[in-house]
Each structure stands twice: as structure tokens, then as C-alpha cells.
Length: 82
Image 1 (cartoon, rainbow, N blue to C red):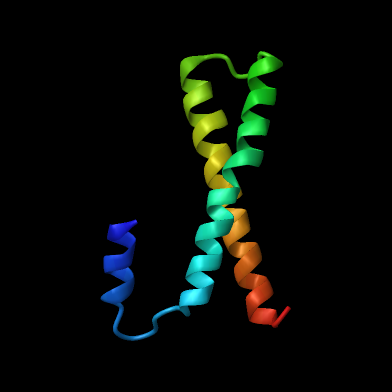
Image 2 (tube, one colour):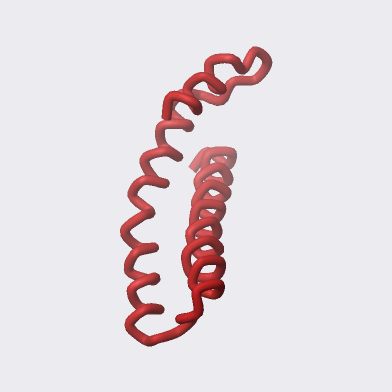
């Protein structure tokens, strides 16, 4: 968190609104729980049990996709004024 704050404060030209940054941060933090449910479902169904498959597909790709999707979704809604 402090590293992100340093980069945010050093932005001279077009800093994002603080409310948008906090909104994306809180939504990203709350996104952990649905991702854990999906990961548990993959684990209980014995899908992707290999070390590489579990590391890259289940953990990495799934988490990063959800974070990307929520970021794009919240940013799109804010630009439309919804």
C-alpha cells in the first residue's frame, strides 16, 4: 500500500480522483472472497491438480482476470456517469 501511495502522490499530470482509487481498492479487496470460492470449487472437483496448472491457471490467471474485469467494469461505469 505505501508503494502505491508514493506513485499516486508523485503523479504530476493527471492524477485519478481519490474516490475512484479508493473505490477500486475496496472492490479489489472484497473480490478476494468470490475468487476463493471459485478456487475451492476447482480444488474440490479435482480440476487442475498439477503444480503448474494450479499455480498459473487457477491462482494466477483467475485472480488477475477478476481484478482486470472489475477494474474495467468500475472504470467504464464511472466514465458513463452511472
